[in-house]
Image (cartoon, rainbow, N blue to C red):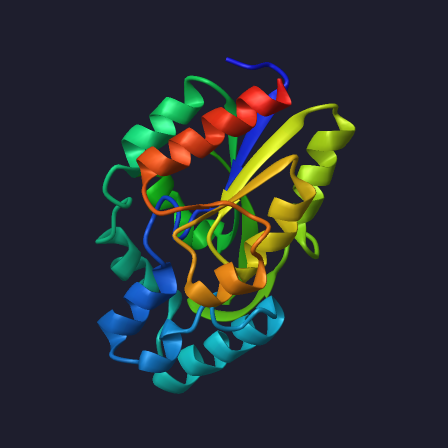
Length: 205
């Protein structure tokens, strides 16, 4: 294991399915399918989602029931185990602890930095970000501790993290993100992502 390198991974789209897309399909609300792949401004996206939940009377328990039926993406557990055997790994996500913990249990409880929901009588009323652009700021913090950082994500809200890292990789991104950020290598499966990590790790030393 390299004591000087940390891997930072996005959660949704990299290790687990998109939570909001699963909620949208379960509730029959196609508007909830929009993610940071579609709307780059996270505050705009979350306000939109909370308004839809209120309109359709969907509470936190309803969402947690959907999440309880989800699992990691095929091969994600094995890939994460491979990474954790070689690097320190931190999941940097714009999801919420109220959503993510059942999925973390299925992945062996890796370290997760994400946000908190504001919940009133079981209804989602708002959210509290860890801090603005928390993924990028986490990487900056690791740099201040003299770690080299290799990061992977799939979406607009990952690109600041990837740019801040010593090496950044897009994993299964949509075509619009690939087109806008051609500087990042792209992987389409865990085998390819593993090879990108090995190459980046060797380059960083």
